[in-house]
Image 1 (cartoon, rainbow over the protein chains, first blue to last red):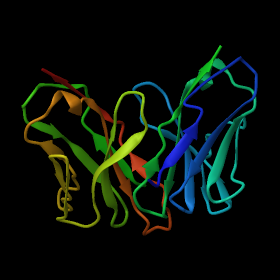
Image 2 (tube, chains in turn yellow, orange; image 1 turned 180 degrees about the horizontal axis):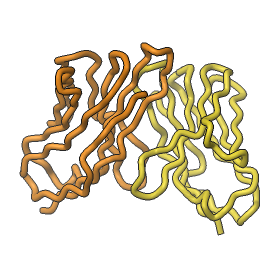
Image 3 (tube, each protein chain N blue to C red; image 1 turned 90 degrees about the horizontal axis):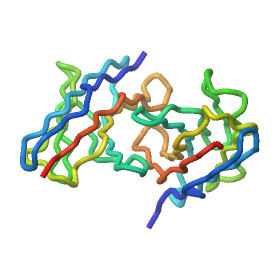
Image 4 (cartoon, chains in turn orange, brown; image 1 turned 135 degrees about the vertical axis):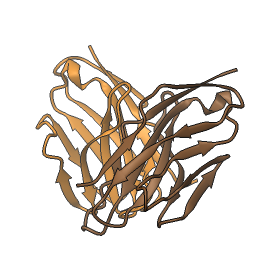
Length: 111
Length: 114
């Protein structure tokens, strides 16, 4: 089945220790998104790629970076995680302005 | 700009009760409207969508009708089950202004008791 896969599902890191979350898709969608979701809140868009074009939201901290080496893969790098970065991180894809397909998320814990 | 307003939760119902979750929107163009559902510990899944005025989206017993005159897309289900307990997000996507970034509502938690 075509889908969006996120690895790992659960990630524990230490305060200040860099961490990378990964997302892959078999849908061949040109747009990929990274969201941060905290408890009982709506997902908050961090950035997205339209093909290879990177688009950062204005209020996304510099601590968050992303890479998209090809159509299928996208990575979220958190350079120096703080306690406030503990959250669920959701990857999504779409074919332009249409339905988004979400992965299952990565739950990040910062100790 | 675009915005989506959902009724606040949690909505608590008994099994087989009727469900309505209100959603209204503002948009500069002609958006597509979506309902997504998020079960505990999972990502969001598309529940249903409608792409133009008067369209009705339906899935798994849920329905929502795109009402342009009232700028609404209320979610309804005639008889809820315990397994419907989840968070429901209303969203719009409006490409007329050149943007394809969806706008989400805050989410409404539904709790269904046996």
